[in-house]
Image (tube, rainbow, N blue to C red; front, top):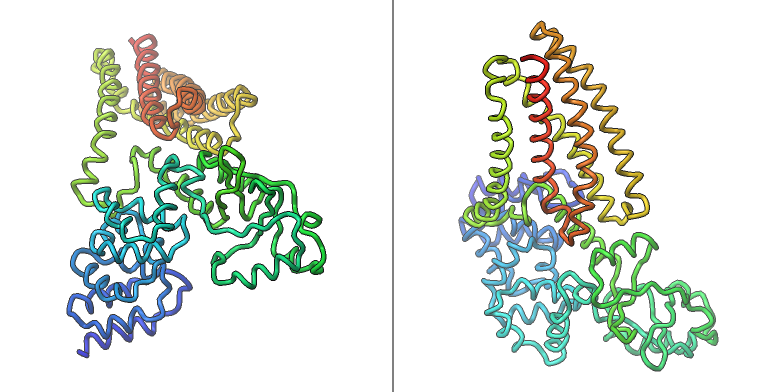
Length: 465
């Protein structure tokens, strides 16, 4: 080992423990070792890493170095590794692995995780992977793919424990012990079903272990079930878990029969995914493109930038209607951006709260009018406060009280409109079956720019000319 390699390795070993994630020193050391082919050093660096940290490390490496590290670990690949990767990186990794290797990984995962990985396999390669699976695993994946995307059917895992409702605690415990090898890796509740496999209750393991062997299951089971249907949107599932503080929930088909279970760890990922999706869409980004190639990222963002260009042209056309006023009072050109900017920022605050409230089912037809009224009042109050502030600054700046009055009045008008538009735009888009997070920001910006310029320049033309 070279002196430089020894220093880099010692730097990693001596690095204070952070508790989670991979630090920069480890990434640099591993990147250099992989590039130089020092695979023994690589093994020392990654030995003991949690599978999620190893996934992060693979994400940090690029190009040939990522391939080399993957080749180093592929003979003893932990199936969980793929479940912790960013989708784009996982697609790259799946292209490197052979179909039989991917099939081996899928067969070791829970059905929900296996489906999540399988969805990232290019369609042209999916058939080859399916042929490498056992008939039972293949059937489960093929059936899961028939459910709508982002539905409970795609989210659920098929591994669960069910017992007849007329069994005793002793029967259930003996059953669990005798079938230990085929039980799910982790589970917290057992489902009681009737003869038609319809769930009638759930038994937390803690309740099962506290009772005597001769106690019947239907005497101790919890009968208040919150079930998800296979076609229920995953966002609705997440809201159900949040509303009722669920640890798991049964998934039933159109006949009410139990077909799977969704657990809290699955819902955590859904909540993160949905929040990330709304956040990105509010910024005009369709999906997370952090690991995408330059061309793909550019192409994905171009469409929204083109829309923004169109809205900017609309605002410029409004300004052009008052070019005579701007030529005569140069101060108007200096002050115009203030009105539009304040309206846009105020509207964005309202819009963010409204989109979040719609997603959480807090903004409903019952309280919509009250919330709209509240946001308009908030916008008006802030408008008055900032009108006074900006008016005084403008008066002191240009020595003309009339300009201060004009910009103050325009500020009040635009802030009122911003408050109204910020909450009504997402409501209207949702009524039109359009995701409020997708187009709300662009529409709001256009409205606040046009109203801001129109109010300011229109009032200026009336008062100052």
